[in-house]
Image (tube, rainbow, N blue to C red; front, side):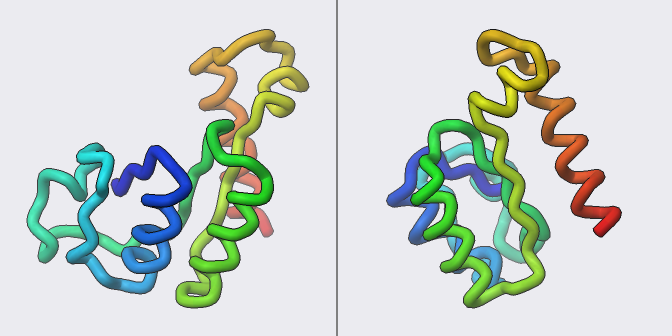
Length: 109
């Protein structure tokens, strides 16, 4: 797993790692890629976005990654998704259910 906490890091790191540059370290210092050697890392098949990324940032990052790695899937959960699911705040169980539902939809497509 490769974890980016802001747009600047994601814009730099995600297209690189998704296209196979496994030497790309996460600026966040988080995720399994921060602690395992590059030879043991795997190219991501999906990218998960939380509400900290705007729609515009999501579109820019998706386009940048797709330009280099068209088979990567993108899943974003926003506040409106959580509210639509009946939660009024950041509920981890609800967020996990939404991610699973969105991933199942991608798998079925």
